[in-house]
Length: 290
Image (spheres, rainbow, N blue to C red):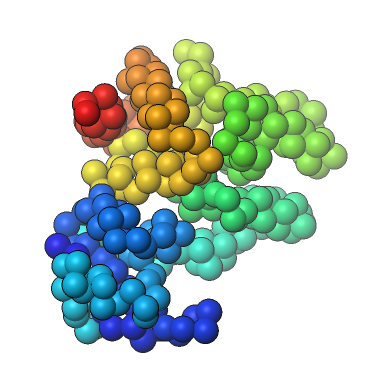
């Protein structure tokens, strides 16, 4: 069911309501799209909607609740996104992580954070970077090799939704790190960044296994988390028509399903493999079935 609280929250010269679902993010996106709420208004687990839309949304079926009731409903639904995954919190956490990883290189960290927070990014944003770093923590008991951690920071540092993004990110890593690290370590970071184009590391490539598993961990998320991921990817490719996106996404999903194995580390398989197969298969069926 869809819920909305009264327009109370001030911003941009008006006041805003919050629009949520207690069932699924997919339901929320569908309701918003049907009723003229722009995709830009989505904020991870709710839409911010201006006061002028409040009455229309209630008429369309959104059940009015007080702000406190709406917050409790969102928490109870299991769809609420923790504060650490919101932009300001994400930035603070990532800044701390970078300064621990590369002390004395604050300017480079700030440059990378600026890239990850570019306005055209939705899924491929600082939130994704933090999720990859946290996945690496899970896979290594918080003992991530430095080249792997740096490759995570650089792997989508250049993101334009093109086929050269991984190569461009590797080139950026080379340019940024060649005076900071030994040549062999810089080369390893660049090699790992390039691996994220295919997610097909060679047998025995332990560092490659770690990075690729962490980058694909989202595939093994809960269904609603996976739905948010798919919606974010679609927003990242907003410049692509629906038909072309469906064709491209079908190809990507089939390639992922064909990877054997999809996850390489024992821990990655345990955490994410089964649900990833379910999520990908469900998405593929939805794309190819009219």
